[in-house]
Image (spheres, rainbow, N blue to C red):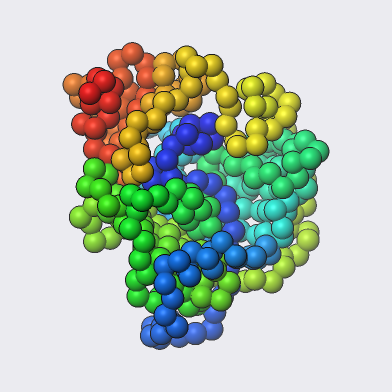
Length: 359
């Protein structure tokens, strides 16, 4: 899923990319946690008032979405659909460093390689040690605080939590579960539960740091499941400012640097889009059906966002259904319709077929 596609997907469908972290604690792992009682509104206010802007930490992300296994020999790749699929399968570990919005470093640790995303001021670099690929883009003046996402980044709790929290509406029941501990930090457990049975998602649990309001972990459970289908959380954190040198990047000797340009709001290269989306014509603009957790997004044929969904890699993961070809997981469904459009949502596949058929 490309950044353009993801920007149209409801928060309950796909987690977002790159965020921030927290702090190593010295408390005993099994010690009971008993925090002062807080209402859901008070915990939400803590998150809204969080001012953490410097930290270092390790993030672990795991997915158990029930995706079918890829045939032997099929490679996921390091960008686009391959990178997104890679993040939606198995477990991943990343080191995260933050010093304000314009100094960020994320190191995704693989078994035999490492991927780096480094932002220093207006410069953003990506590096993949497996093939030596280096990419550079510059953020235009006046958008220094803009958030830039790169396919293949491991999502962190703050951004994933933000996606869910900004989408809260009357279709969501909000509660506070038992007190918990994450990465040595005591935390409140903010629980979001859909009020509708028309979604694949059973609940979302957000561990909120009891001192700073920083989201430390997000777990998404499928309806009827006892274990998370998706989880991202910190295993070690420090709120101390990282060394400035961590945000310096120089391409390795002999590496070929590929220059990229941010698109503007009209889809032209040159200036950034304030929302991270590219405006299209009425013929290619996504349409939304339903509300809240049962929202369905339809990307019409010809939309740039449909390119990823129609790659051979995605084709290997789909199966035939009456309404086209489907990719089904425990949290999200995707339908590739015969007319070339793509429908997706945190709903059963028959709901997508009904929308595609105009029912």
